[in-house]
Amino acid sequence: MKTNTYQHFFTGRPTPEIAQDLLGRTLTYQGPNGKVGGLIVETEAYLGEDDSASHAYGGRRTHYTESLYGNPGDVYIYQIRSHYCFDVVVQKAGEPQGILIRAIEPTINVQQMIKNRGVQGVNISNGPGKLMQALGIQSRQMDGQSMSDALLSIDITSKTKPQNIATSLRIGINPAGANYQAPLRFYVAQNPYVSKMLKRDADEENHGWEM
DNA sequence: CTCCCGATAGGCT
DNA sequence: GCCTATCGGGAGC
Image 1 (cartoon, rainbow, N blue to C red):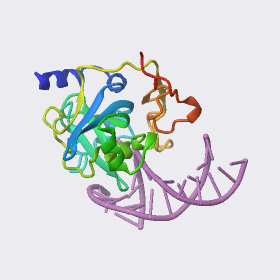
Image 2 (cartoon, chains in turn green, orange, purple; image 1 turned 30 degrees about the vertical axis):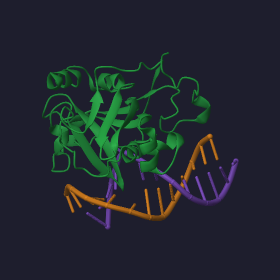
Image 3 (cartoon, helix red, strand yellow; image 1 turned 60 degrees about the vertical axis):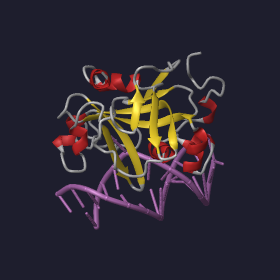
Image 4 (cartoon, rainbow, N blue to C red; image 1 turned 90 degrees about the vertical axis):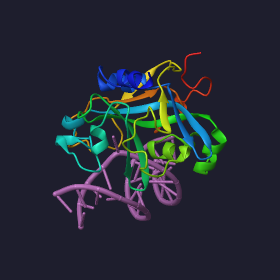
């Protein structure tokens, strides 16, 4: 049962562990121009009410953040400036933890994603707003839906194993107010589609995946 | 390549 | 008005 599999995957272990386990799994979107998607190469964990960087900090629960409080495997889509970003909701309902998908390596219908973005190369999807534009998602329409029946989903039945997983502080959060200085950003070391990637660190040979 | 700044949209207090 | 889990362009190294 797909629903139960989702529940099992997205609950019952620490959010940072789930965030790492998402690396190398395939994110797909069944869009109006066909299926598009790629391998997840970068994630960030947001730990809910006690995490000052979380939208649910201090129990903040509004119409806008409501879907963070939903079931494990639900979609949380929000907007920052003119960009849309995507979280997977994790942990049990009512516990507002989430994992931000920050970058993917395009693998499915790459030409369509190039078209959606208007650029080629790593800039197709090396950032949370960019990957959403690459997929062709430019609204909050799917916010609150379960991935088990949404057009947007993650294949949790298989993954391409990263050779090495690197960690860092999260990007773009206010360091002064952050309760969590912990390294809650995870990425596939040497994968060129990771955001803020230095060119000299990118491995053009195997993109950081196990062979 | 790295740093810095302005643009831009929507929801909150 | 204020804030933000961003992006892309431009200046300077």
